[in-house]
Length: 114
Image (cartoon, rainbow, N blue to C red; front, side, top):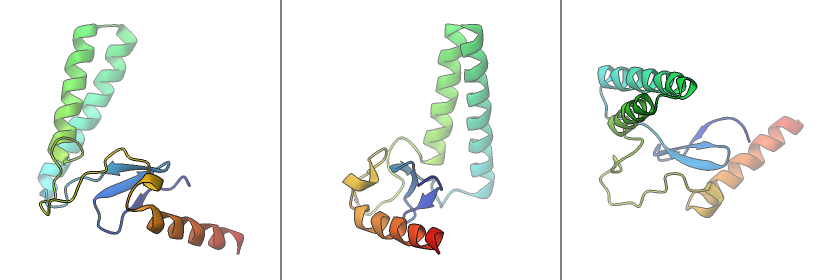
């Protein structure tokens, strides 16, 4: 499955069979744009730093990416407050979302075959 899915509770994106924490939906639009811009700038800076071989620039760019991911809620403490465990980076088939994902995959395969 190559398309990006969101779990029914909105906490995770499923990408290549793995759960990735979704951005915090309670962020303001302005904050989300700011963190996304910082994330993209950090990723571009990381690529450039790796190309140049500048270890200090690599470290700085990685910190920028990490700051943005924490700000978005994709890393750091889970953004939900109900005490549910965090399954970030877990294979979906080894998570409580396994049955849901199997149903979605089956429905998509049926739709493709039709």
